[in-house]
Image (tube, rainbow, N blue to C red; front, side, top):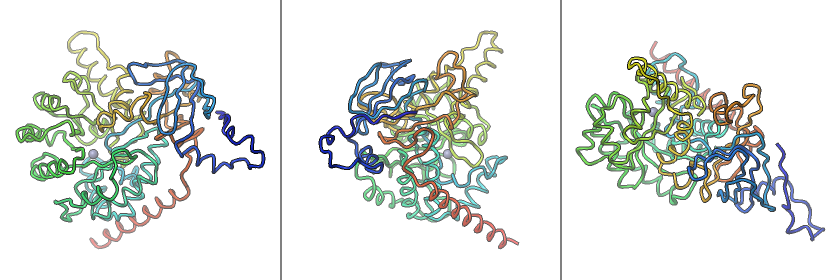
Length: 475
Ligand SMILES: [Zn+2]
């Protein structure tokens, strides 16, 4: 793709003695929030109902903000990104990712939930140092950007010591991803039941709500063993005024944990329910009536709970899910895989129901999944005024997909269908986060990849060595 830097030097052109601005300085101008970028001639899927989809459309960015979306936009003072034949979408949003464990990627390919708990949480997680959390969050954040995921909620239950929070925050910051850092219960039996460190990091790192990194809290589950802890965590998060994310699913459903929290008046619009399966209709009504939000990790729900996301059920209660990856120790984390897993789970169940009832099936539309992966994700994180759609006034978190690869041609129907059903992370050619270019023509930019690889390697080496030492002790 060609980029034409138009009139960048117009203001100084008359001063012939001035040297040309070197590449580094150009980048500095671009990240200074003063320069405009015009994404030109792409298939624009805005996910904004008022704007809709524009088959040949443009998006104008000024600094970190989208200022115009439409056809034939002219801007003489903008860098042009030629998006002809490409798909332009809002950046994807992953609303629940245990980012710390990214360095344990693919470790338990055939593991069920007990194996996950034993190998990942106990055998590896207990040995995590702040440096290892840094490595996991750096790798996870950079990988997300590479995949077109511009925002993640980092469900960080690796707070072995308060300093682990600093490691995670540094990793996320260095990766350049937009994130809601949500620390929570540690894996090790260190007593962090009064998580005062969250108050400390709030004062230290999160003084403004208008920054790339914001704060939330991952609370303990409303399950038999942790119910009191859940209540304490929720009260603590509310004292700090930060959003709450909570695992639910079959174990919570077993003790009617959501009903109990509802009886205590603790449900609210600041709560995200992760793995919303196995819950009764009454409890879904409680979540809906308190404006709670859902995060569905379709593959994790199948692999950990043997339950299949039923989107049509949620929609019938007025609840629109967001999508999440959970972890990469036995699952992929890119949004293409997540969208397909969710669609196929829901559609398979509907086809089975329709067959039993002797009627035609009513399949969940693909466009709904695009909304779950973007705008509904933003709503889940309480960021829908800022991100989630290509809307003037929102922050420029944008993905451009190259549609020319052999597995994507020819486009029949429209690029959204082909892109989401056949696309791969490698087709994500451009990524903007907060108006800054993070991936350009298929290459990550502004990140020292050699350093990322080296940080990951040394953490992996350390954790492998520690696990072997523990193994040796047992013998
Ligand atoms: Zn989880």
